[in-house]
Image (cartoon, rainbow, N blue to C red; front, side, top):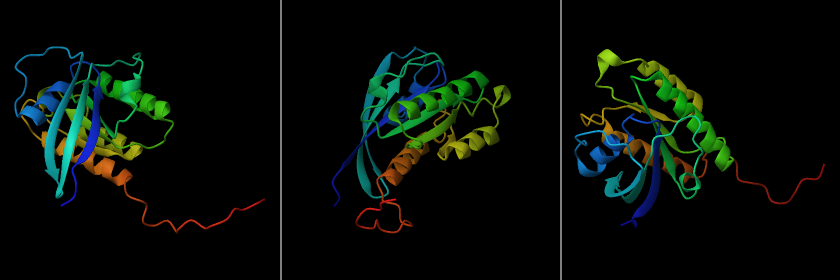
Length: 187
């Protein structure tokens, strides 16, 4: 039996998009009754995914805006990011775009494991962002995408399975690349 793997996941997005609702729903199987702005919380959950046991540490961050400074603890030792916007708020999607750029810049990378999440999919009458717009952005970023309802527990577990899949892609060597050649090339 394979040993348990530890994964540290950071949940980010603007204020009131449902980051805590998604996280608490996943960890404790219920949605919080009222909205209380999060300062920052860390949660732990053990799950089995694709035959592997995982200990997941989830950092539920305070709501960010486009002017927020990316704190060091959100870029050091993080395996993957869940970037959450509300399908009812165009400005929350703009904040996620800024956050994505800040994360990539702070890590000095062009690609990181992440999942773009459109929350509040149950609020169909208040929707301002189409599912296609979210999927299009995820395609541009080459990351996973899902819509969910943290409040109604729709696709919440799938959010966390997707981020594990994205993180695990990064731990596997590319299969199509030829093996590196020994020696050096002088030009």
